Each structure stands twice: as structure tokens, then as C-alpha cells.
Length: 84
Image 1 (cartoon, one colour):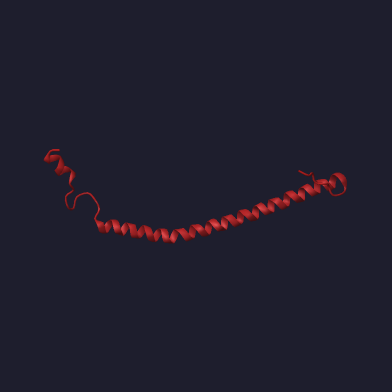
Image 2: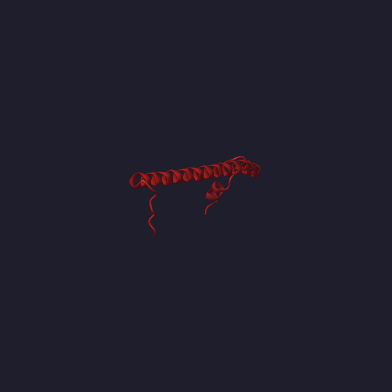
């Protein structure tokens, strides 16, 4: 390469680019944000999972009640469940 191209590739002080202190500051700030965000997100995930479980439980109870009511309406007595 010619000397002119080498000079263009080398950054001069005060020219485009970040200093080491700026990069370290950004890394530290990202670490702080992650430290705060992760427990919050984990808590929300746990709450959502518990809510989903309770909704599934409620849906299963309703389905069982509907099935039993249909059997009672047909026969006047409890239905025998098919065996798999």
C-alpha cells in the first residue's frame, strides 16, 4: 500500500472513534440496565406462567362439568367413560 492509503487508515487523535473510557462507560451502563431488567422480566414470566396454569385448570374443570351435564341430560344418570 502506498503511504497515502496508510495515512487514511490510521485514525488521528480526536477523529472518529471512541475512547477506552467511553467504551467502558457504555459497558458499565449496559451491565446496570441488565442487572435491573432481568429480575423484573423473570418475575413477569413467573406471574404469566402461574396465570396460564390457573386458566388451564379452570378450562379443564368447565369441560368436565359440561361433559357430566350432557351425560346426565341424556341418561338421567352418570355416563360410563370410554376406556382407552
